[in-house]
Image (cartoon, rainbow, N blue to C red; front, side, top):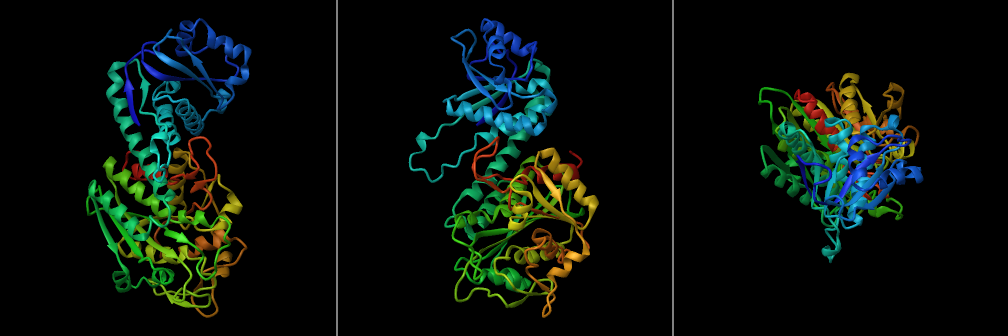
Length: 496
């Protein structure tokens, strides 16, 4: 979808659908809507008066214009109560509107939703619009049936500001496209999105700009001592990969911040086999890795003045005669020994080695993202991602970036008492602390490998995909975390 800014009037812009918003209890129509209403002989005002429910949040009404204005249809979008409107609600409403337009076979759209607060709202409108029209039809045999919107334009009456807004639009589109890239990676089946394919995706991203990429194979990982990652991989016939992406936007003499993403391309649970119900969803257990890949792509395209190293350990977790077994003891890259009490607690094992690698590369701060625990889903559902940290200042920076993106995150306590649950009697650690406080103990297990580096762990188990389409999220992968990481990189680079 091509997104553009136009210097034109609401009445003269040719399009299939003109999106306008209206708040509840509107007595006097805003200027933009008044102009359109007058051209349509007061029809919009009468509709609002006779059917006030059309102004409730997310309500959609199509109004045929009969040639009275250049747009074929006016798409009236209910915005709800004015005092309750937020940036994320604008994203949600925009996603609802463009999806309704897409269903109605609109190929060209014009939106004037942003006229309320200009740049603040414009970002949310564009993000919601691009994310809301996403579809995954890669495996459909008849792609011609897939409806699509070709152009989305935003009107601006001040010609001298068009260039400024065009730059903003280009930036927003880069980020939204990167979110959709993460969604694609998650939505592909595990028979395609193998560790090798994840590495190929990283190499393709590196070819598009100033990113160095290195892919460690099994032999290279053995040399590095990544025995925790290799232990998880030993049950699968798919070779593991550890992907390292390095973006240097602030000069090589400046420190690097590490983004680490879990890349389990299919998680059967291993010998501690998962129940068969919904196991197909475990193709998305690499969502953290997908987020890091997509965020690195966006940061590179935006040329942000920061240094980032992305580390993505990729493997399958499968049962076989050679698979990791409960009761095994392994030695991680850090030298810490780990007793395996549950082979389905594998994500923390591969992250242990990935974070050790990032620390040895000189990472000054770390963020890791992982679909780590069912306990996080039980605690926070699909609304919020769980957060654990060892450094409140760094955590606040991450949470601020998430809030700006409209990605809800909730910090959990880091208390010494919880660490007792992951102590082993026969090794340094055990890889599961049991059912109580499972999200916290899993996060604190990872924290055992960060040394004293400021670190934030984000558990996206509940937010990485959605079982139904709502707002700007389409059923399947959500791309959660991409906008947070990009916002964080912008803030670190002084562009936030």
